[in-house]
Length: 273
Image (tube, rainbow, N blue to C red; front, side, top):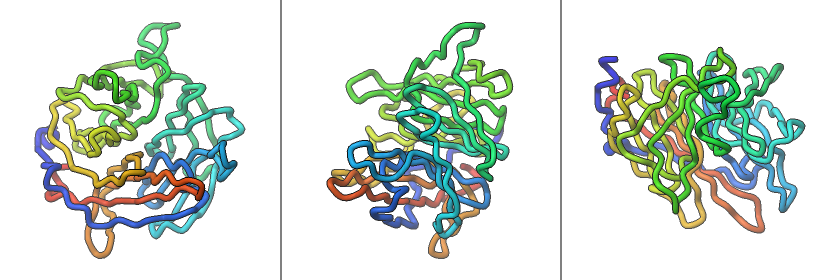
């Protein structure tokens, strides 16, 4: 909790690596990213207009060699959002229908459930909007929020659900500064929540203790690019430099397949993250 009070100074974070991945099956409508300590996991949607790729979760080596794929078209969802890793499982935010979907990292077992309200029979307080999810390592709760369209009021409520109680709503974190078009979220071990915004084009940092806004790190975004998922993972080295925060950008191309820019950021004092 003491470290949660430290300021990681996101405005000083430096992008140490950026790699373009063009016209791959997984780059089509790419949405989210996470890491289990050994491998990257990336979520992607199928483009129904072109029929390209498949909707699901891809597993990669540290060097981005594709190792495995878990398709979710069988489950009947129209959209997979950002993903997060926690205790052997990859959790995915799903829409139409809005549910939480999980698969183990070996891709040998999976399950699904609905986000629920605090009382029996009640619905999730965030309704049918479910673009991202992230597990807080402090309490094991899965957090999410409404997406926050650009023409609507900014999002200030982050809802916490307990996977051990059928994803029932347990708590609400109120942010001291709102955010819009939240495409991804990730927690640090020190109790900082990072949100990737496709509205302000930045990584927005908050304290999980009280929702205090700790500033942001800007993301360079091109005219056809969209900020997507985010992952906090220490121990990653890119071009000989340590990186702790990792962001996916989707380059929406037409008629060719989409491209992805995978960006990696170094935090000045990683112990404060």
